[in-house]
Amino acid sequence: MASWNSIPLEILYEIVGWIAFASWSFSFYPQLVLNFRRKSVVGLNFDFAMLNLTKHSSYMIYNVSLYFSPVIQKQYFDTYGDEEMIPVAANDVAFSLHAVVMTAATLFQIFIYERGPQKISKLATGIVVAVWVFAAICFFVALPTQSWLWLISLFNSIQVAMTCVKYIPQAKMNFTRKSTVGWSIGNILLDFGGGVANYLQMVVQSIDQHSWVNFYGNLGKTLLSLITIFFDLIFMFQHYVLYPEKEASKSLESGQESNEPLI
Image (cartoon, rainbow, N blue to C red; front, side, top):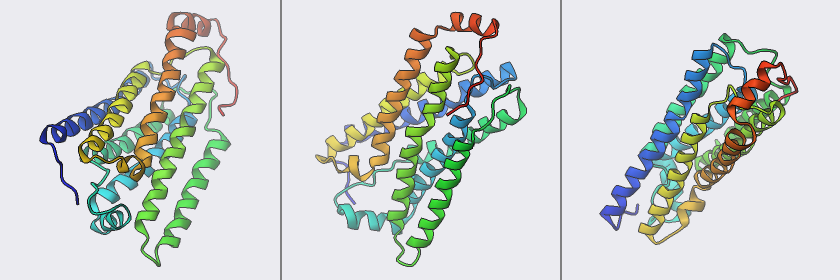
């Protein structure tokens, strides 16, 4: 296993990683607090919440497995070379574990607070069921040959796919309602900061190792950052430019909120 060439870069790597962890971890709380204060989840898209749980569960399986399993680490080194470093840091594991708990808490709020006529769509339910059935089939495919790196790489691919899909229902719902009321912008700002820090962490590691292998060795982490940044910019544009909160609130008070399908 490779070691760090520069102590300052190693320290910077850890600092940036934990900044990403803190930003992404705290990003769950503004929405939870907003729901609690309003005793309502109107404005939060339920499909987003459900797809988000599947996404973070998949990411947790990948991170925990690669970080703690010597068997999977050996398979990683056999594939990418002993001179490379494991592309999962302690902050990745901590974040993904925390994220699963927080997304589950958000779903719990959906069941106990006022939610209006909105329901989880059949399409979102079908996607989630199909993903876990696919994952179960892949487990039994990997079992005879012990192809665990291949299996957890699939979970990494699943989390990337879920990241691409999960934001779409919320963005569409904001567009349909012409409002972001009920959708916390604090969540988005922290999420954006986490995405930037997460990508920067990989850059620091690549500079130290004089190699860009970790970008495609952990393609999921790379795409996670880029996709997150892309959608967060869309949400910020919706909140601050297209649908300023004061105007959106007046629109909702006049009874113009839409009940269109979510996806």
